[in-house]
Picture 1: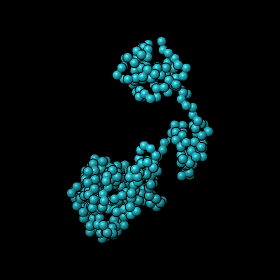
Picture 2: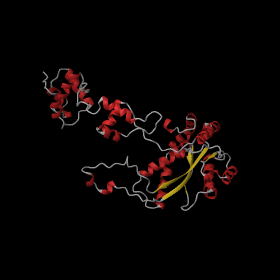
Picture 3: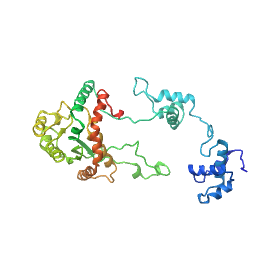
Length: 373
């Protein structure tokens, strides 16, 4: 009843111009095949589908040859030419860093040139044959052994001191610089267009950025349940102890009281303006509780919710702003709008991650730990 063709592939090629048949449709065709219906009877069963006769034939032939209308026969298709055992072994040796020698791995392009195969084949070998996954490198601060020990010991003390309830009463603060034209990640910023590159309008391909882009520094604080105001640092101000005490700390303290009352813990990092004697004295005299300069782990943006969440969330939203601000005043307006619309739920989750990160820092013996989260 079913006609056979000497070459199933030729039948499939003859139908390449027709629309794709879904997985469910193939299963419907298989069911009708199992019921003994012919090609035309299958077509008439689902006229609204608009199937081609050659399509139904090819799917039925696949079912009879492999037992499934969906799965291909093992070994069918174009034979592998690049993913040979020899190439797989060579890629394995070159794509991974050698033991105790980080950074000795080779890029997929370099490997492709050496093996005279396509870079896509190298990536297929890595993924499908070697079962490897690709991870982006993350830039981090240098942690010396002395810094590592301080991070470890201070994280242990903070974990004991700041219970979950006390963490919710902690006001985390930080400063951040935002540029009108932030750096562009060209690896992920692609333009899709027809024709050749020289035929694409240059306005779509070129990203203009001033050599010295105008910038604004902001200071802010967040806690579980709220965020303070976004405070803009004066354009020509130098962030020293005097400016910090006179212009920023009173505002940050006011934010603390408005959000947490008079029972809060004030946090700041180890910037020089934060750790000077006069600054520490001011905070001690004006705040009910604070994390002193010898209590906060050094070189630890991975422990401050503003660094590991808030600033990144703001920058991501700012990257999506179009058109970009033309001057600093417009930049301030945009940043203020972004700050006010940041979801508090995400900030609360970031604050509650603080103790988890302290434990991760301890588990990593004071070393970097974000890749372990």
